Length: 405
Ligand code: GDP
Ligand code: MG
Figure 1 (spheres, rainbow, N blue to C red):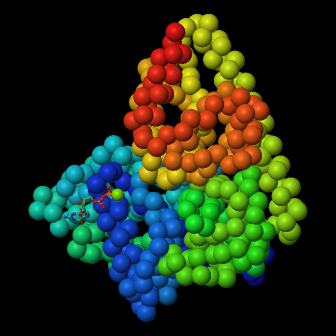
Figure 2 (tube, protein in one colour):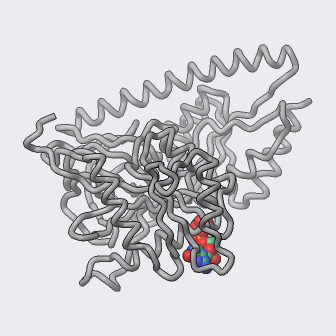
């Protein structure tokens, strides 16, 4: 670490909590009230994160409420947020997903701030909720602990300024620093296939500065930053640490949680991507073998059967819905195992992974590219196309039943 080049960077905040406790409302009210003057009324773009300014200091919010996205990223080893806001509705109290959110924040070693929401509700009972928090080992200040609990109403916009002040305070204690002079590293927080312009990915820059024309490698994919947009949809030339930007110039849609790195030239970037691809293939081979061995033993014992699936779909919403349904299929001893999922067309990488682990590929509203199709034919990988979720689920259920026979 070169100390003289280090500057303070904005905290990255994730909002988690039980369903309907007000995560989306809170993200909306912060964004609406804190969009910099002059830019108010400007069209905000959903890119998976946004930045606001409070007392000349910036705060970055991950705009994917719920902890699924966050957990998925963490599962891939990506440490994205510095502070966790846990929203608890004052009229409903600590619920199962509240506890999960607390567990996730703790596992990620992030400081927690409790946003006690819906205090405007007539049946709000802040004292009861605080007690519940303490019972769940969340030691808030009033009870002698050090966790801040801020009463708010996302609906009426009350307590929002206090909450933002506390975020800055907690961030200050963490002493978040980065060197903007280095080549950028970052993490993908969202990615999709644009109908007209191809793959786009939101990068949260973590160290260094990402610039137009940079040669980048994202997991097994290499490319070049050909266009870059901020959370207002405005074209930008560079992105310093903690800034979310949507970029174009990758030939494929990467996965959320993949790391981004800038390399000195195209060739090096390509080589590194190739290395990553081989490593992932190797891992899948090993996994495949392990699971086949295990599967074999268990089959001998008559315990478990699994249907391996690679799922590619056009948007995150469908992916979540399909995953939810797939997880309910089968029985205790007969399950669907999702070995890879992603947004965008079926790529050669997907087919390789499927081949290595005896999986089928489900393409929901997407197609394979030419190379993927050739590879699938060569490797005998079954790609199934769907545009209706229940048909997909019916088929997979049938396949599972077939495995039983
Ligand atoms: P999420 O599922 O956690 O994202 O929750 P939402 O933000 O979608 O909110 C769920 C419901 O609670 C919606 O009908 C909101 O209008 C309502 N809501 C959210 N915040 C407040 C609040 O501060 N006060 C009241 N009265 N209602 C709220
Ligand atoms: Mg919501």
